[in-house]
Every structure is written in structure tokens, then in C-alpha cells.
Image (cartoon, rainbow, N blue to C red; front, side):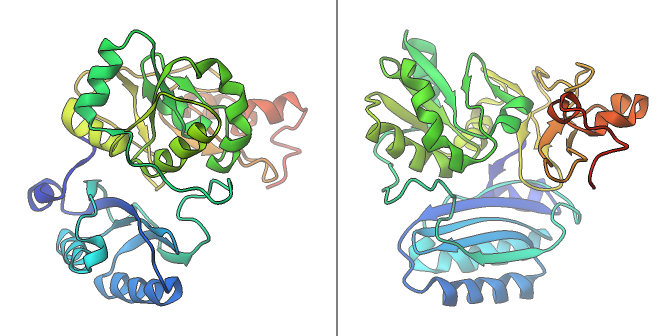
Length: 304
């Protein structure tokens, strides 16, 4: 399994990657960020921790003992004693460095004042049951376009966006789902809490979110109703469950099965897309995304 409960940490991975978040008021984000920076640095952890007045969003990697000590310290703070921790196997190269930043949002939606939803969260078992038993249920992937390219739930509606902050403008294109039971999901749940509030504000009545996201679902159900791999924002790029894997990632140039992501060689573009090693070796122009190639840019003329 790509993600597991923190209690399995000692026996599962020598170099675990943890994923966690919580929306909660933080009075002095700068001071808290300094504390997190010192704690993570002292433990030799690498990764990203984003802090805002609205909460914390982190993904860190390091030796198992260091990660355990970090989790213990985080949960010793009464504000975070109930924060769910997901982890997967990594290595020393999962993150190149430690970044702890203060932001205006712990996940950027740019939708103004919005209160994250929790009242419509469904456990993975209940979300799966509703997907199977509700005739008008539609799984909605509110992640970025390239994440869905790597993997998604069967028959999911995906959003053609490059960044989560584009979702408020994209919602109008999903008007046809207003009379459906919308079962939204993301990687770990953090984006759904805001997206749910956004959709409800736009008149979507039956909106439910997958509590804990894909990470929590695959802990329990592996690849049931899931196709492909789960994109992650670190050097691994994707994680996957081997048993029952249905590979859906396809090279943007050759159509070969692949889960290998690259950034478009043309720096002004730099979009992520799937590129098989074979296609790259066949033609250096394939290092550019299809859109840049269609615009007449080539390996020889690209800016990089």
C-alpha cells in the first residue's frame, strides 16, 4: 500500500514520508513557522511545511526515528493532538531540502473568505458505498489535470486545471453536476474541505467529500474503483498499489503506458506531462509538451 497508518511506521519504512494537515486558527504564524523550522532542522527532516492563520499543511521525509519524534512533538501541541498522519515509503532523495513558509492559505484557492467544510465528509467505506449504490453519484476529481492523468477513480469527472487556484473559475463548467450526487476527492483531503465550500456556495446541493482523500481510501480498499497511480508532490512523482493495478497513464507523444512525468523543456511553459523514456530517446522534440510543439517550438528553439 502506498499510504499507511502512522502506527505501522517502525515496521513499514526505514525512510518514511508523512502527509498531514489541519485547518485551525494559528495566532502567530511567523513564530510557529520558526518553531517548525527549528524542530524539523534539528531532526534532519526535509520537505515542505506551509503555515497560515488558517492552519498547517505539511509533507516531510526522514529516518523513521526522526519522523516519529516529529509526530510526537506535533501531537504534544493540543491544537494538533488529533491531526491524522499518513505515510508512505520514501528515501533520502524524496525531497531535496526543507522549506517552511508562511502563506496566506495552506492550500491556495483564491476564493476570498471561505470556511472549509467538514460536515459532509464521508469515511472511505461510506464514500465507496455511495459510489456503488447511489444511481446518480459522480466522482469528481478536484486535483490538477496532470494528477488525474496519472490516476483517478473510474468514471470520474476531472478538472482541466493546472493549479487549484483555477478551480473557482472552472466551477461554472461543471453546471451539469448540480442535479447529481457529487463525490469529490483529492489526495489527502485538504483541497476538498475548501472545494466543498466553494461548490456549495455556487448552488451544488448534494456534495460529499472523501475524508482523508485517496491516501485514506487506498489504505482500506487499494485499487477498488481506482485506476492508475497517485500523483505526489515530491521527487517520487507517483505512488501506487501493485495488486490489481490498472495503468492509465499514457505518454503524451507516443501513447505508451508510463507514469514518468517531466516538465516541458520550454521554460515559459514548464507544464508537467507524461513522457515515456522510449519517446524521449526517439526524438528530443518530445521533451516539449504537445501544445508547445503545436505552436512551432522545437528542441532547437526552446528557451531553457
